[in-house]
Amino acid sequence: MDVAANDLLFDAAIEVDGVRFVGTAVSMGNPHFIALVDQPVAEIALEHLGPLMEHHLAFPRRMNFHIVNVESRSHLITRTWERGSGITLACGTGACAMVVAARLHRLVDDDVRVTLPGGDLRISWPGQGTLVMAGDAVEVFSGAFDA
Image (tube, rainbow, N blue to C red; front, side):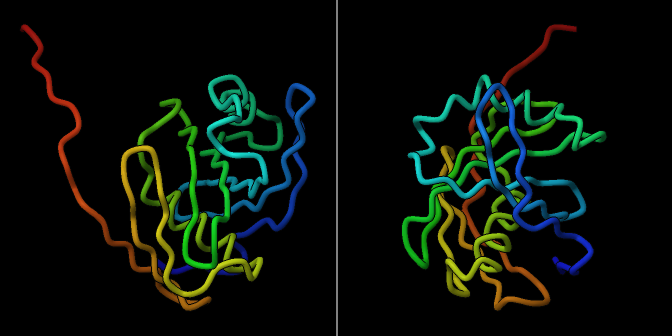
């Protein structure tokens, strides 16, 4: 996946319900807004703030919203509100977008482990060109519907 300069919106301030997020918008073919936060992501009321961010006037076509803690130069921890779905266990394009945002802020190196509620992904990006994502593909849910 390649990232071009016109796929970015750097350090935009968005406020919802009295909470201000400064984030970077990145397109991975779908829109992402990444807020690098100091507060632990588990403590942020994503179930309340996520839909407010998704439907904010700044995003007329809506977007995926990610709150991210930078644990080290090789590790991010995140939670995601995915447009149209709500809180999700994982988001591959979101993990890529997070690494792009953190790398452009010079907070991470080329190879990053992204910890999502559903597991870890490894993202490699040298700061330009193609991103490479690796991780496990596992079944988390199954079900059957009566016809």
